[in-house]
Image 1 (cartoon, rainbow, N blue to C red):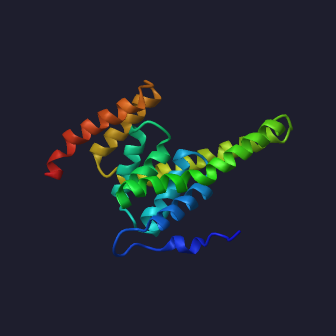
Image 2: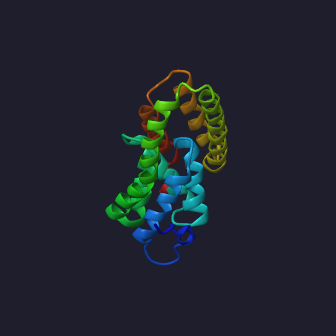
Image 3: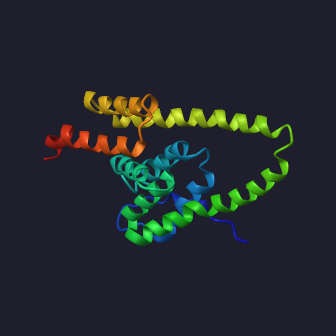
Length: 194
C-alpha cells in the first residue's frame, strides 16, 4: 500500500481554486492528527488553513467556526463543511467532510472494540485522566489565541463576557447565546460595515 505524500498538503493557493484532491488530503491530515475534541482541534485547523496554506483569512475562519457552532451536528465537522464550501462549493464541502471523518471513523471503531475488552485493566483510568487534563490545556490555548484576535475592543469584550456568564452561570442554551450575540453584533457594528 502506498504511503500518502503529506508534502503535497503544504501547497499554498496563489491563483485559482483549490483542487478537491488538496482539500481531501488537507482535511485527511487534520482529521488524522488533530486530537482532543472540537476546541483543541480548532487551533490545528486555524494553523493549517489560515496560517500555513492561506486558503482562507482569519475572519473567514472565525465565521466558519460560528456557523459550525450554530448548526446541528458536530461543530468541528460543520466548520470543515463550511470551509470546504467556501473553497469549492458543494463538492468542496463533501470532500472536506470525507477527508475529515475517514481516519477518525476507522480508529474510533477499533478503539471502541479494544476499550470494551481492556476497560477493566488498572492502567486504563490513569491514561484517560492524563488525556483529559491535556485537553484542558489545549482548550485554554485556543481560547487565548482566538480571544486575542477576535476581542478587539470593549464592545467585543462585552459580548464575550456576556456569552460566558450566560452559559457558565445561567446555563442558557448555546444556540440562543449565539443568536443573541449575532443580534448584538448587528446592532453594535452595523455602522462599521456600511
